[in-house]
Length: 306
Image (cartoon, rainbow, N blue to C red; front, side, top):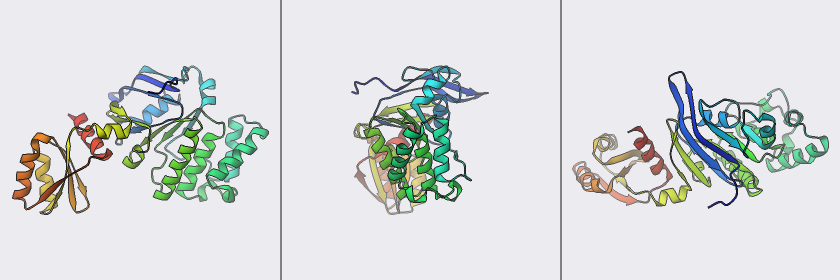
C-alpha cells in the first residue's frame, strides 16, 4: 500500500455528448513515483478522461483533483504541476527542436537560468542533442514523440498525462520512450498513460482496464494475472478458422485469439472437457499454458460487453 497522498484523484467521472456516454462513472487515483496505465480499446473513454483531468473539458458529473486542486477552477496552479502530451501532433513543424523547446519554455515562464540546464539535460537523455537544429516536421515518429515529451517536461511537472504517446512509433523508439518514463518516475514524478498495447500495460505499476467509460478492474498487472481464475489453452492442428468459429460458440469459452498457426483460448475450467471433445473431433490437440495480461484483457472486455 502506498502511504503517500495521491497526486491525482478522480471520482465518479461521467461525461455525455448528447446521447453518447463517453464516461460512466470512472474513478482512479495515482501516487507520486508511479506509472498508471489506462488500458482499453478505441472508444473506451481514455482520451475523454485525460482531457478532463488536464482541465480541457468539464465532466458532466463527478470530480477530479490534482494535488487537491480542481483542474478547471484552479487552472494556473494545476498548470504548474501538470505536463500534458496529447495524442495528436502538438508541436510546431516549421520550428527546430531548439525553437520548439524555447517556445514552450516561454509558455511555462521559465527563466533563462533555469531553462538552459533543463533543456540540455532533456536533449541529452532523449538523445536529440545533435538534431537540435532540425525542424520538427523533419523528425521521425519516435524522435517527434521524444521532443514532445521533452517539451512537456521542461517545467518539472509533478504529474504527466500521456494520451497514447507511442501510437505509430517503431518498437525501438517505444522501448526508449518507456526507459525515459522510468527515469522520471524514479525521481518522484507520477505518470498517467493511456495505451492499447498489452506489453506497455505490463510495464505500468498499476493499470485500470476501461471499457464503455467505466473501470472494469484495476491493480498491479502481475497481481491481476496471478489472480486470473480461468484456464488458458493453446490449440494446435486442424482447420484453424473452422476451429476458431466453433470455439466461439462453445459455452464457457471466454476469449479466442490467433497465436501464430495456433489458437489461444480462455475457457472456464468446467468447460475444458467439452473443448477437449471438440478438439478431438476436429483433429486438433491442446495444451495448458500460463495466462498473460492479454488473456486477462480480452476476457474482461468480453465480460464488460455482457
